[in-house]
Image (cartoon, rainbow over all chains, first blue to last red; front, side, top):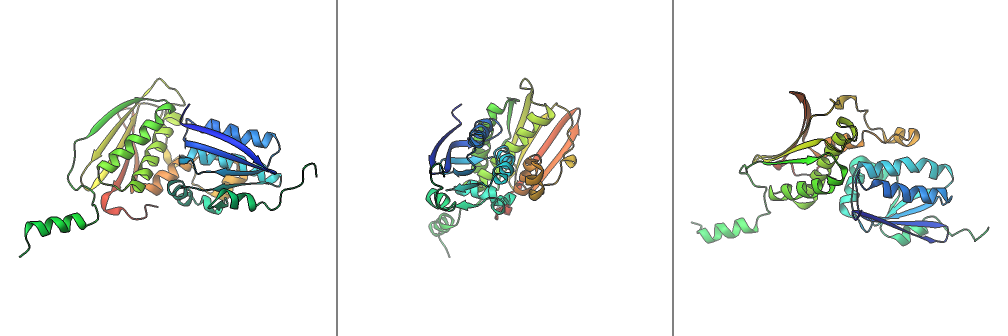
Length: 121
Length: 165
């Protein structure tokens, strides 16, 4: 499925997800799986770097909705960085920019979580 | 008296305007598989651009048609991938119109709950976003049942190219 790839990496206690391609009802399972994988590892500070995301349909927005309560319920948050104009516009149409914090860059989004907790602390 | 050259220059300098002349209809029949949603999106975007819409607007129109197609696959056909969806793209001069026809179960869009984002989060509900997006993006979204077929018509006025929210 070349429509979407989702790579991830850790920076301190923040998990970064990199969806590349587009998220629609066909490709959304891959995105959901990446979110669920972070949650199952009890990594609740998540930044979705949208620089490679060209487009997101309601299925993808639903995936964000489906995960956010558990993430926030565990003291974490899901934040987004580097949205392109199309994705930003879709967020604004739905009012998602009131529900999710968005940042111009990945570094800003990571920094928004504050200093990393020390390993094992 | 202005010469033809000056008139041509003025036309060239003006912002590109959507085509005002109706073009022939494009008909397409595609399988009810989500694997085709990418194609639906690309095709809709290109057709909207050919009709004269700027790329950001064409992107949003493509999203609306993606959502309408997804609704058919998921609700009218309940996920069955062996059915057919008929698409009709029409550049009507003043309007860009996309019709989607299916022979699945009738789905009453009025039964789709209105979007309340706060409740969506608290109740983990994710349905209804697609119809909401379609209505926000298009100037008109209508559903009708005709001869055991569901017809969803999405219309965007060309002179309504504002923020398209």
